[in-house]
Length: 182
Length: 182
Image (cartoon, rainbow over all chains, first blue to last red; front, top):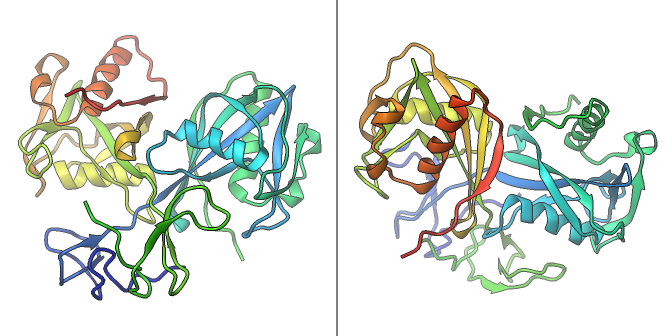
């Protein structure tokens, strides 16, 4: 976790306090007046399907090294959420995907993230592990390694996806992930 | 626009370059190793309805001082998007809203923002200008001050909202706002 100690603009020390006209503490620089706001990040992901099976990636990076996930990652500036989801699918699974639509939005307030997950079909069925993946593979619903999944949000999204697929209707939704009990 | 010149953690000067294992330039601190990522921000908003009319706010702040908008603003850490939309409605229009559902997502890649707009009904029909509003008012479709609206995304969302309301169906959607021609 990065600590905020200095002003990114002028390099002076910052103070954590509620600025005039605001109602939340921010990191304020008294030397140049810069206020550094911290806001939630969007994680864009895709459930890529090919002939009824789902493409998953085994993580080659922390956190959750060695566990499985859908292609997903932090959205970058100057792209759309759909572009971010397709880019992550390309980077992590070296697969081209045709985005079919926004599927689900998951609030994860305790880590200040919002997951935006799309449905998509592989364009040509080709895939391979990118630099952040140990392995990539297509799984049918019965084959999904449920006990080796990296993130609760991915388990929830995939379970819902298979239910929706059975009833033949993918309705966009918004939901929330609570902290795991320890 | 804030320039990124210094490391927020250790205060040393940063360099803009592609870190090892990455494919985009980031602000990297060679003194402590911190990488400062910049990511898109979520703007959460609400189309608050009361007896068929829509609650709008006349902006008391820049940009677009004096022009009209729906209640909307930057999502904060540790809240859900729905909470952010309800909070903004409370702050800007001093109105309590019951969120009815996610309505639309607008990519605005040229300013690295993602608008997430909810539908909602006022709880008790009460409202008043908050500190960031000059005025608040309920408008029917015919009365909306289309020529005095603050942001293209709000015009687009309201136009679609009225169309959807006429056909009696609000289907969540994702769309994109292009830069305005000059």
